[in-house]
Length: 536
Image (cartoon, rainbow, N blue to C red):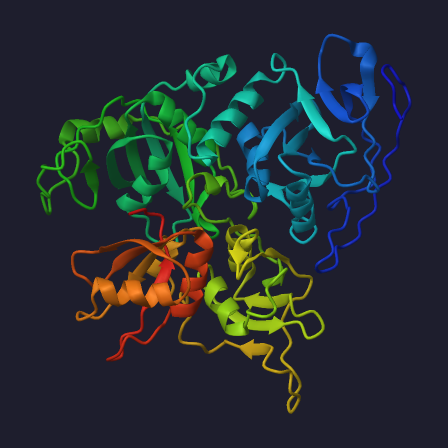
């Protein structure tokens, strides 16, 4: 027990033990033995406090691998130029980040998650994937403190960024009464952002940009163009504060797996003059504008301004690691990949009476091409799923961990296994292992497939495609009701080949997708089902 003013010194006692599948280990991830000391100010042994008034309360944090799980995590070896957003982004995929303490002089930070379970999941995940920020490996472990208390006067900017990102993640708007937040957001010089797309392996459309950025406020206008052989865009919000929120949350994030990295800064322009509504430019406030096929999207005066517009980005910030999908904030931004990590997932807490290899293949196939599925013989509430690569495994994990399937909340983590072994020839494993390597149902076999642009978290609303002409709304309502659940709303697209269908819960939608994706509607029409970001 460490009392106020204690000068007791703790030494680091770190060892690295890989986590076993399905067992959450209380481990420090990639922690090396070190004599570094972290001085913080503490008022109790179970809280970390930043308070610059009483320097007699300095305490060396017990940085031990033996520390029990805590919702407070200690992050070390951060690059000196790291931003608050990048640190917060490490925790976002695992749950709500409730507090942050930056110690930039020591290249360290403390991150507090809303629950201990979320923190355990995060530490367990990083036993398999060493986190990197700006191409620098960082070290994450449990703090021996149970709570993070911060003095807002000393930690003002970090708190403001946390509030902005958290509000966006929850789908709300930041509290404009918060002085610290106002001070950060008030720095926005313009409602116009200049966006550069790096590593553009897949096409990025104007509609994709609108979907990502509209989470942060009303998108008024977008102009896309190519300059210096790079795809760029100018995007105008209704208010500068929205532009600042988007920049804080999305700069450095990837739109698709491992590619299409967003580099965002403010434009010197304060208003965009759009002449045509087409695939290169759009004024959402003036839908009556002509398409102007073959015409330049920008008038000559605007073009001249573009050439002078500053592109003073913060340098080549490397994409965040897979788990840093602050993306999450936009609901669209996928995980950035991490080479060398396993493509095998361990899924536990399954309903063993209901689950089949086929149902797991269909659900996980929404986020990647599942190659093999094995329900464990001696533990039938758990399964191993081999995806095509580590990026797809991370994407599936981020979207499906914690979802409800057949009445049970499933847990998805990375497995220590590199492959899923098929049963020996002649051995009957009761159909628990299936090889889907040559399945025609893989969604992502084709490079650049439009399916990469339609990856969404599980939702109550489903997108249906490949609907035969003679199938009616009543037919589809009956089909999905029979799958179990209640159809709350339905809407055909104009050509009747696609539709949106809303179930009463996300769990019902998950079950319907597993049961009815690739359902034979007759005349060689197999129904395609995916999750939608829309509501009806």
